[in-house]
Image (cartoon, rainbow, N blue to C red):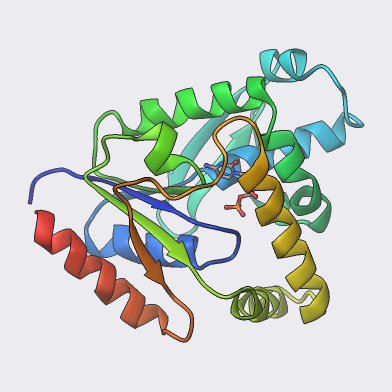
Length: 219
Ligand code: C5P
């Protein structure tokens, strides 16, 4: 099979990372979770008590992704593995704001493009098909109802020992989508040539098969 780049975009908690991981494993490709980069910068922003100078924040930031055979993608921020802190509520609730800043986006997009240069990448995010990899071989825009996304997020949280309220999750997810869709720089939107996959009511297995069928059409 020729080397491909696959872009997977969509709103929060639509199942992108679960599906992207499975696709990458089945296709022997590398999965890149770009949200984790924005989350790592947000983690640093919070650690530094919310500085307003984003150029300075970025100038002092070293960020790299490594791959662990068992644990998958790890995020190394200023020589520290911060992966386990990136799903904390505080990070989730500030990430859209930090990710809307130009210095943060330029830095992250450059890194993502470097990672994808050799091809063989499944990359998920918000602007992958529109900005990061406009020439991706396959672009998927994954959606699901906000109710279903909140219930899935609640289950994920439960597995990590976190009790959460579905109504509150629904509100947080909807707010984050609004912010991501309405920011000035590379807002979340479907690329013209992306294929929409609605995952509402579908199992992980079914969605994976659906996207694999799209991959096989182009390879
Ligand atoms: O995918 P995840 O929920 O981890 O992304 C966290 C946040 O990072 C998103 O809500 C969005 O604000 C930002 N993001 C982005 N562009 C990407 C990936 C994530 O702006 N390519």
